[in-house]
Image (cartoon, rainbow, N blue to C red):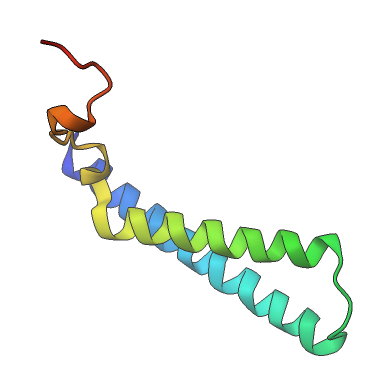
Length: 82
């Protein structure tokens, strides 16, 4: 994977973090407007904020290394051989 791909993944991560910020601001405004009302949109905004922030942090910090292979101990591998 080239350096350009890594940069694109990091920029996508930053875009997801901006989306998380926007959804959090929208959710906060809704809660301050009508504090006791819990509707489906509020739950959707909360889930979108969480997922965008999680994915954005992952991509912004790891970039192209998100696809690196890692060595798993034999104890945790799916295929237990002799």
